[in-house]
Image 1 (spheres, rainbow, N blue to C red):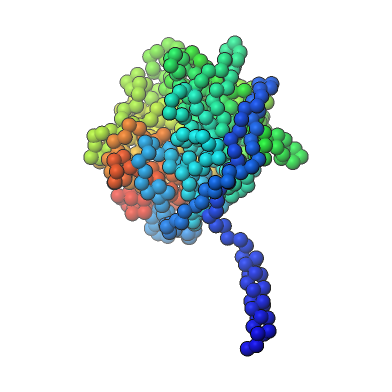
Image 2: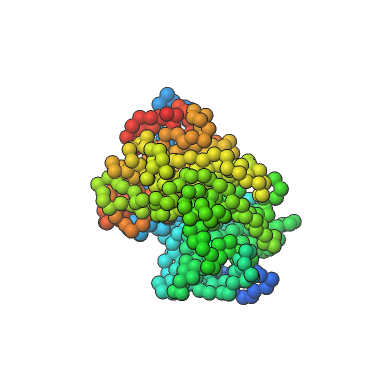
Length: 565
């Protein structure tokens, strides 16, 4: 074959290869993460802080290390007479960090998982795209010390991923919030990032006016979104003077403008504007047990207020704060729900009575949870709203209580509530119940719950569970199935069973769950594993509701049972 013919054949082969590659589309591959530099406070105008973010990117590329093959997730298939739950895989094989702090968000094609070890992104077939430790993820905001308590959510309004963490220096009362948003729909980046110090003036809507700036260390950060704003809440515990700093709410504009075209602002890598923080629980407030405000995830439009104009914040501390006599006796509990809009801002507060569902007088703090081969016992959390979702006129919330009677009496027990919430100012309790795991094992404590709701109304919960004959494990369950009385939880299943005794000073501080499609959800939680003392692994699992489901080996339940008991 002469040289000219070989050249022609080679050229034709190259053209056909290029055409085939274009037809298939580019394959999404692991690649580097680039982030913007930290912001600096410039000015304070009309009760809003303006921060400027640099336009250049960090020259240090966060390379994704080669990943071992991951477990293949469930293939969609027709129901079979007998099935196990979907597959699960570990995102962290072993960690000795004090608490896992697990969370998860699901988009159209990806999962993003965060915990105290790092930020991880996956395709839904289990392909790992990003695996980076938390401090490196935020490295463009250096100097930072040890980021913790990460949160993640998927912004369905703008196809973005939002990641939040808090950074606390080794000494002092001050701290920084670290906030990142993806530039586009890919969770591998690049990301716009900003560091915001918690030393900002604030005002109390029930008080005389602005509260002077004072250094406070932020704790328990929570993040929520609506179309135009990001809402960040956090507690500010007592300083050296012993004064509780309050619970702050910041709303951060995504864009400088949204009509006719989104432009400027944090999502555009430009100026970041923070409206003056609201402190519903202010300095010196004696309702110290009502400190945590949890944003409620809103899906759809709320009648009477466009979805891009406000957010619900939910709080629970074990007492009915508007009835001082009952509070002193500890015989009645209530929720506090705040509706906060970005216009003004304006705040309205509602109190929703719950009745006697929590033995506050007998247990001012939750009883520690037992575990197999213990002691030691496991700290089972605090009284607060851990998660919340609004969809189709209903608000779903999860907390933890000590039931005053029944099979779970004297035990820390995850608790769910459904509120009728047709508009921001009309709320009432519809139903509530405990999330018991005694069908798995006697004497089970359930704690650190999370919750999400599908468009079809299916409610899924995730939580930690342990018992005298069960290691500290992670579990999932459904509420309101057609095979049970509506609102009654069905048989729970273990996502992953612990394999070692946990002797750490804390656990949690939250778990993660997010709806995917149809009746399917993804959960992320942790469990102790063998190895170095107090080692844990973080597991992700997909699970779907199906009345014909029978689980056993798949989620290590130890028995053959189905979602329908």
